[in-house]
Amino acid sequence: METEALVRQACKKFENDKGRMMDVLWELQNTLGCIDDHSMEIVARELKTSRVAVEGVVTFYSFFSREQKGKIILRVCDDIIDRHAGSEKIASAFSEELGVPIGGTSSDKTFSLEYTPCIGMSDQAPSALINGVPITNLTPESARDTAKELIKGVCPSSLVKKTGDGNNSHELIKSMVNNNIQKRGEVLLSTDVSKSAGLDAALKLSSPDVIKEIIDSGLRGRGGAGFPTGEKFRLARNTNSDKRYVICNADEGEPGTFKDRVLLTERADLLFDGMTIAAHAIGSNAGIVYLRGEYAYLLPYLESVLAERRSAGLLGKSIRRKKDFDFDIRIQLGAGAYICGEESALISSLEGLRGEPKNRPPFPVEKGYMGKPTVVNNVETFCCVARIMENGAAWFSAIGTKASKGTKLLSICGDCTKPGVYEVPYGLTVSELLVMVGAHDTTIVQVGGAGGVMVGKSSFGRKICVSDLATGGAIMVFGANRNVLGIVDYFLEFFSEESCGYCTPCRVGVIFLRERIKKVMQGLADKADLGYLRDLSKTIKMTSRCGLGSSAPNCVINSIDEFPLVYSSHMREKSDGFAAGFDIQKALDESRRIAKRTSMIYDPVYGEERGLGE
Image (cartoon, rainbow, N blue to C red; front, side, top):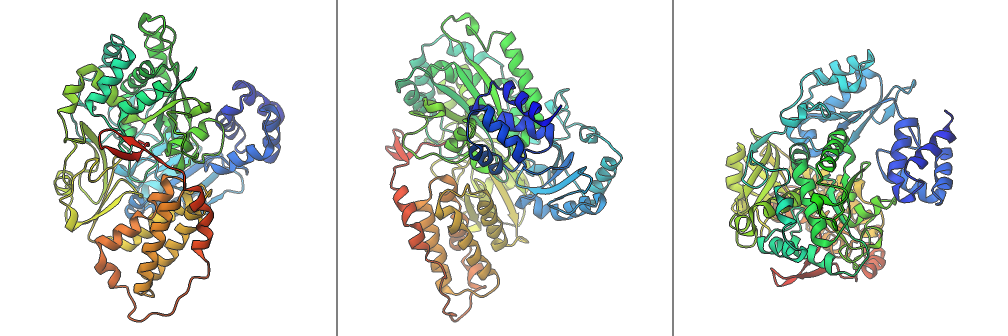
């Protein structure tokens, strides 16, 4: 079939709806191997949008390509954990065996080889995706063997000789990934979790009573910001509108996190149950799961669970024979963009746009997806909602601390003997955590991913909870042999690559931070450079448009505070009179103007204004 017919067919499959741009582009990428200029022109015509808009989306996401890629694409994970585990040697082994340069495509268009950020397998690093199939615990030898099989024509899915535990061996998954559940708590990873008990209990209550139960439980969003979930439901329900949406953020792209991967694999019913409860609470008839592209291997299984729930009367028309309650869920596949983990950027992506954050206010609960009130929570949060409705607010609130109720799933990886997923009550200290995971001679614990908090030995008494070390779940452990400044440099490299580029503080400021960190690493910096790093970090945090920019400098500030001796050992005694060749303050003036908007909302639990994110 000629290209034009294929493109038109792809557009028609999604009803020529420009809001389904991502689905159309995935269809073309998978069918044609790229989305070239001619294809973009046809898409623009069929979806009644501009060529510029289509090209903007294509070029924004790393899994889409304007140029022909190989029939088999090898993406070697290159996060900091995989780097320490030897990802460079893995990529080199693939490159040598396949005869393809890293970042290139073979002349016969058979293979493409490239690095990619965290793919959610940090507990079994080094890892890679081969046409979306996760290949874990790689060694240079196994990489060479894998390459030889591919050269022989072995299908990527046939590379899986032994499947992982739990549902990883399910017929629709068949993955070598292991869940690595190291500690099961009573809320989410208990062995006796019901598929629909939460929804059945919720449907016996009025919507306001469901919201009250969630508020009384003390549940806070499990994405890191910790906004009260019941309050978010209440705000969405009380916003006047003819339509409301429930969206699950399953785009856990934070380096070092993988706990939602386990929930999607083992607790899909619990997730969909929680979303349906949220729909009943706010008055919604449509839900969307935004699934990160790296987890595409789970898509057929998740679709099958949705189909089973429809057949059982748990989704669709008149749920549980309740005539006034219709609700269904679709899954939207992302395409490799870390920024889409930010809720407003995720909404932009769902609307068929570049994944750029939106200005706030208005907040999604007031004006979100398609301009309608929208609740956005992550996988873990919705799973907690279902369990709360099943067992009651008092049961949940009795676990954890005064301000941080319930358990928390932690993705723990790095220099420890027992990496994996741990479900623990809030309030665990870093020291207790290190003993639990078998970590020895630890010097750094990175809590909350690249944009989180870098904790040194003097702070190992701090607690994992909303009021102290808040985290979406990523915990990276680094031993005494790791270079503090090298870790900081990696995080800044990651943020400079993942910035959407909209505002100057993030686009330019992070690059300047990295340049100055490299100066420190080279032993060419002095005390004035430390002042520069602090001042620029604070400016970026205050003036960035979204959470990515405001959290990107954390590693700089934290490392200076926690590891002053590391910096002092790299300092020159005398200043070289360095002067920046670019006036960052002047460049930030426009961003300061934009950032004058408020990004906070009143938190009734804390009695103060806090971010409305997860």
